Length: 226
Image 1 (cartoon, rainbow, N blue to C red):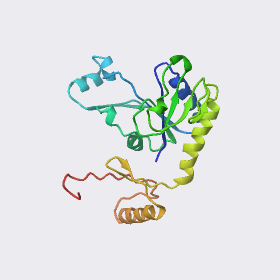
Image 2: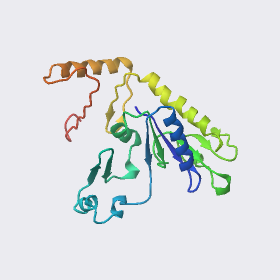
Image 3: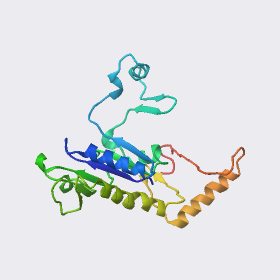
Image 4: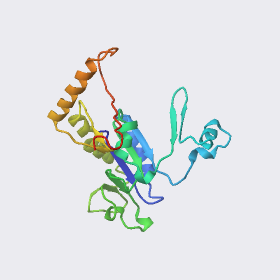
């Protein structure tokens, strides 16, 4: 599963600056990094009335994709409070080395808090689950603590804790999500699932070899296999 780490903090804490530096450092190391940022602003696509994408949204479309020669942008209705970051990252960013998020403090992913003494605010780690480190301009003893000048060390911490560990454990990865929840499997269970899938696929016609990746989605009608 692609690792997901979120930077959280109060307004003007410096979390965007720290997260951006970490993304820059990881990219220089050769990693593919995806970024997901939370915002309180609504209907971002509505800022440009008259554009084709805006007109499609106004017509009632719940998802609008814009494809240019070198990138794609997708606007889709969703409930941020119900967003499962791990499953979302699995769907959209599975071929990346890590997803760096900003915000989503209530999500069930590891978090790094960014704070400053001048904010005079209580530490979020005391009220938010999953805080594994704090970046601050004052000492914090409860968890691993980095200063604002330690972004290189913070980058190495993220690299060792998430990226390298994932590459060591999942060099040949099979992942299963059920109802958007990641299901851990032992090695023998993954091999059994692999044998079943490959055996079925090899019996089909028009399969191009070698098989490098298979993506399967099964949507079960309500009432079946319950």
